[in-house]
Image 1: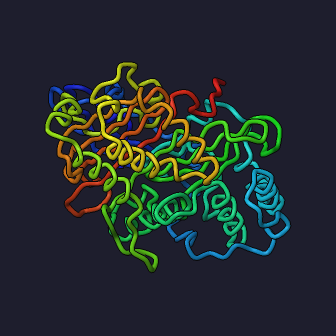
Image 2: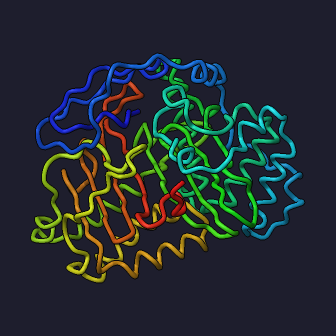
Length: 397
């Protein structure tokens, strides 16, 4: 768990109170990298925030094992944008007026920017309805919606969503911070704008350590970012009848890439200072540096370029296969304008290990930091995929 105001160069942040949740800031030494100024005096929670917190639950959403109901059969079996819109209609038709008002919102970039890696109780501004507020059958329709929009591979796409939800169920068994909302009950889904073949709308799903934001315009995916991934415990944990390893493949892909580099390449790729977290995190849309730092991909061998693209695929593969291929083709075409940087160790298994891929469109970050939500010693990742040219679907308002 991490507040996005943690990181500031040469600053020691005070304890931060957010909606009843106590978050301890990080003490950063000179040379550490961050972006925001220290927060001012804590603001008391608003009546709206308190109302949202009152809706939090502590039970499991069972998204991994829940059945997809027969109601979705009306939308057919062929994967398509038309089927996605149909599934949203099936869900909305089943909702009460109260829940419909929570899930169906007007589109605005300001609303789309209300995503976070914080647990539900610490960031009530997330739009949408909690998974646990829906009936079992309605959650089954949500499952169908998310499966339609995401990748189908193990540990990617919808499977990664399920495992991240499982992590909150796990944390709920070991955490004493009951106000944080550590439970898969508290994942949120929303439609920003009316799902339709015309116009702009966003399918938003978010929760602790997760943000999925597909923006569609006139029947096509206009942007799949910001896309945030994090997990604690890491690298694996047992919960809800399975072994969960949702971000191990990202870490392993980055480690394989760094291990392939020669000493000369490593020297050029190494970034100055220490990175204790990612830069382009929630509410930090302008913090991607204009200047590229590190090793030009033009200096990689063909095999090393393949390893870099394999790392990129662990992010792009979170969306549907056809849409992922579009992004992979785009980033492959831009390889000669892409730079690799890292800080820390090449094993990517220690606190403050950090990897970055910065292209003309692509921005990926992977950062390891000490555990915050569990009592166990160890590290957990924060990670983000941004597309500099079409974050929020290229929308500006």
